[in-house]
Image 1 (tube, rainbow, N blue to C red):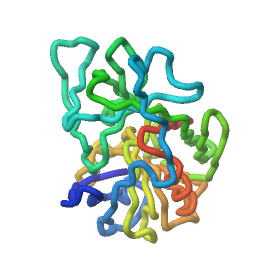
Image 2 (tube, helix red, strand yellow):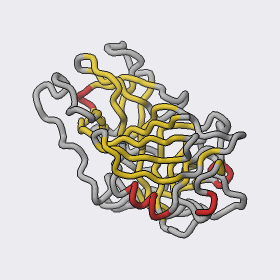
Image 3 (cartoon, helix red, strand yellow):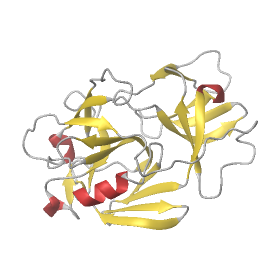
Image 4 (tube, rainbow, N blue to C red):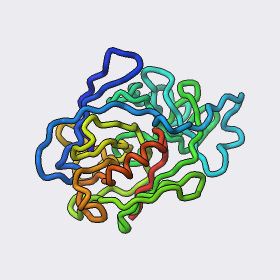
Length: 263
């Protein structure tokens, strides 16, 4: 589970944050120091879908097996309850709380409006943004987390490219199911720590913990220094992979990638 304190660096080329992945939220048993992390957006080995630049980019739909990803192009992104509402219901900061570009998964289109999944409670909550306030890209990747099988599978265009065993939430603090997306890719400065070398923040939140060491109970996919628990029900909501497998996943997955967590 992600609990965040932001410390934005003074340079324009790198953003440094203080990230707490609370062990109580991710299945650990002892208190650890807050590891430093940097935002990796997108992973260096990933080439995200080309920016859509046609006069009407939504007219023909995304390529088969792909989705639209919306990245905010304004410092504060207005979120509307419905298209053409008289005013925004809220706004989201860009960059987000962890210093990463605000990136959202598009769920529907209506004229010049995009319905997007929002990284907040309740899970799978949506709002509307105008196309003029975002940059659109396509993404043909999808992550599926099976809780019953304790497996994480990455698909590209419908074809499996990676599968790994995982540790998921225990019965008294289960990993929530739903349709989510990657909010940010993070590289931790202590790769041997309890969260491993990388974490993928998700737009989902625990249904058990509504407040967590200063954070809102956001879940993540991350590494671990307890590989012996992989394949079991060991966490308080997060999804844990071995360190080599989270590294392989992060190298392929940009922010915005859909994540389906299924029973």
